[in-house]
Image (cartoon, rainbow, N blue to C red):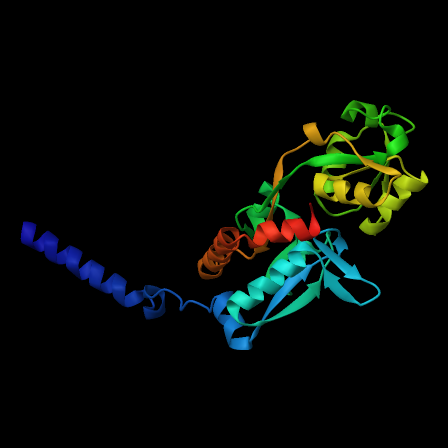
Length: 266
């Protein structure tokens, strides 16, 4: 009886295997990594916004991108031995353009967040910063906390689509939120009195205050958040991700990131 049961099981398994399509028994052939594609094409596409000093700025005089992450992108191209092609994107379209394969890697002072990591893959962080207010120098005593900012009669300028807007929407309930699609214009709006505060990344606030005496980077010793910038690629490409991490480790070891910080941030 045991022999008959065993034979029946073997026959059932045989019939089942005959029914299953042969193609389903094999894993799909892997597609080329973006690393291999870039090497074959001879170029890598860098997604960048061009509106976020000191990381990515499209200079209207030269029509060329410049900044910390622009120089970093050139060093990535050198490491790969390929040409760098910059693809202009915007903060609202940053993720969509990546997922639509309009660029290979985002390099534009992009904050690492859980929401973004759910849809894409971030490299290790390369600069620590936090959200802080850019205000007028004359308002140092007026704005010393987030509650001082979130009051009726205060105008907070912010660009749409990025982490700055998300922070403002989450924490500003009483002050007036003024949206401006051109991030580069908002510091001037603060200086001119059209808005009172720009809540942005502390590095950006420091840079604008350094070049305009009317402005002041406030609360740097107690930033509202603690974050790191990272480089953003599509998920599911461990070969490319490993290369980016290896390249970044070498950049740290050689002091290249330190030099970029001195050139653009310090």
